[in-house]
Image (cartoon, rainbow, N blue to C red):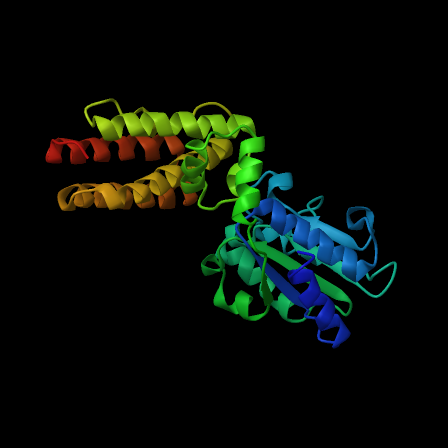
Length: 301
């Protein structure tokens, strides 16, 4: 951040070209958050932006939701902090007020649409900073209202050093990279989450070697609230999709057709989970459909 994004923002300020809304894109959740805090520190001229009265952060993880909702943008409920309620206040110490919205690519289209007017014309002195992993999940109209900066991933040498320091085996790091979709996330999740994914991969790999084995990797998440089960279910399905993609180079043409069928079913299941279908129902249907494919092909992958 200090060597790339922040330098560009400093240059923009020097040229009097500060944007009303910024979008920080990157694969690392922690690096995106760090980049956001550093930008806020620069604009607010403080070493501790999180303690500054003119810095507000809307983080879906802290709010206990998959992504920010309409009520986090437009004031709908008393006691729920929103962008609209935050905009009632002018900067109290200096020229700028910073509002950060994390994981905006997880926001629904209705919440993104509610943000459009503010992103185009925020009150004087207010700067929005949005973070996202995948710009394809953002409305084009919202993208057009933001100045986009990419936050690079860690250099490969640093990734490997941190992976080793965290106790990851050489064979485990690529497994987690494929499961999580990027190179930084395996270094950021908890050891409990990491171990759960590795156990999940063992079950999946056992089935790959012998498709007559039970598909224990397709059992529905248990315990906790429905929202937590849904989040865990999406994590599992995304991981399986990543591991399936890894398989393609070593597959025969016929086996590729089989995996293609599995990929489509998993994508449909992910869409159902995002569409609020009960996780137990999604996984029960997916298990039955995958078993039908195995019965049809009757061979190893």
